[in-house]
Amino acid sequence: MTELAVVVLAAGEGTRMRSAALPKVLHGFAGRSMLQHVLAATDALAPARTVVVVGHRRDEVTAHLRDIAAGATPVVQAEQRGTGHAVRLALEPLPEADGTVLVVPGDAPLLTAEALHALVDEHAASGAAATLLTSVLSDPTGYGRVLRGADGAVARVVEQKDANADELAVSEVATSVYAFDLAVLRGAVTRLSTDNAQGEEYLPDVVAILAADGHRVGAVLAPAEQTAGVNDRVQLAAAHRVYNGRLLEAHMRAGVTVVDPATTWVDAGVALEPDVTLWPGTDLHGATRVAAGAHVGPHVTLTDTAVGAGSRISRAVAMQAVLGADVSVGPFAYLRPGTVLADGAHVGTYVEVKNSEVGPGSKVPHLSYVGDATIGEQSNIGAATVFVNYDGVAKHRSVVGDHVRIGSDTMIVAPREIGDGAYTAAGSVITQDVPPGSMAVARGRQRNVEGWVERSRAGSPAAEAARRARGRTESAEDSHDDEAGG
Image 1 (cartoon, rainbow, N blue to C red):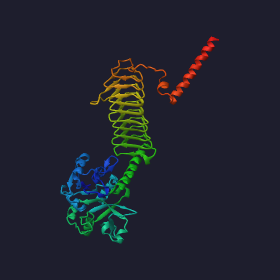
Image 2 (cartoon, rainbow, N blue to C red):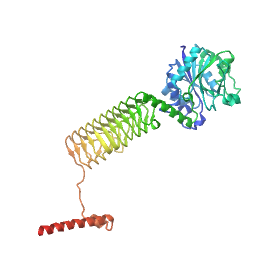
Image 3 (cartoon, rainbow, N blue to C red):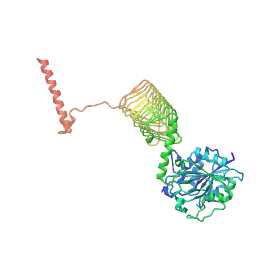
Image 4 (cartoon, rainbow, N blue to C red):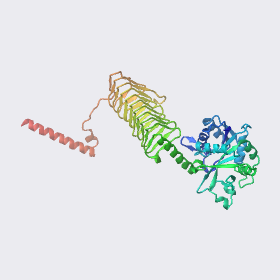
């Protein structure tokens, strides 16, 4: 196979996206921009060179390109004078040697490596000067129509705005994806005209130029769901659903159970091992990894989080957390960045954990905040415990040892160390370290003020209830006295 170069056209403004925040090709889904999706497909062909034509808001696109494909070469199209003009600029940094040029749009995130391989392979096998990737659409409105000669070869592509009634009836459309002979393309793009409805140099016009010169132009059909472009946010959402369906199907065929694909969303960078189960309402983002046998969901969102084998997460949110094997989380838990849960740990209902380690077999069952803490093994953190980690200026860390029992409603005012085997009494505010094996009691002695409600809240329902209860008590005492005196 001859040397392959890739040209990605990413200079357009994309006004139909209605976006002041992002250039068109930087919109995306599944953890990637549209441009990154396209480059992922072309990179699978191992091209010798990749050139990306940038124009509108080019500084942002170029900066993004450095992050996702540092080896790609950006070429600036300062004035958007059409796709043909863009390709002419893109060819300048390519070597003069013979080879194949694959041209793709930067707003076609559903392109697959398989479709591009088929196009390039057919181009090489046929000896054609150009080979188009085409699709047949039930409604081809807006697309350039592919017109073929009597021998079945492509004769030309006519844009929607320039087509007559007969040409508009053609259902085969050009997808803006081409494989060209490099040397032939160099000469053809210099002959493009702007004599058309938009006054631009159309790359599809190269097809007619090559055919008129006697070169063969071929075509490879691909399903429309692989070639669809994205011009607005409605199409972006539709593309996301198609792409998500592909990802989930691949995961399911690899041994993952997806209970409800319609409500399950997975980014391209997510790794799932066999025998993982994803329950309805699950969203997995970034570099999340889930090990074999884990159950995630229902209604769980994980971002850049590792989940160990056999763990279970229900109705929870986790970001940049690490969960060991056989961990249980939820329902209604929030794991913030820096959370590490060791094997067998449990974080339960309405618990928030941040920048903390929870040791093997330890539990934070409910209604607690664990921030900037290290908890040893087999310890239990009682309900409504708060690690008071912030003094208004800086965060401080606390350490809880092994086999510790923290009583409910304990405030641990950092920085504190609670030794192995220690206990804290419920309702305590811990402001000193607790030695191993000690019971820490840090609360005021209870004092009962008899009759306060009837005196201070006279006439209230509470006062009336107290009066009745006091009457019952006094009656019982009188009866006991009578029996004793008889």
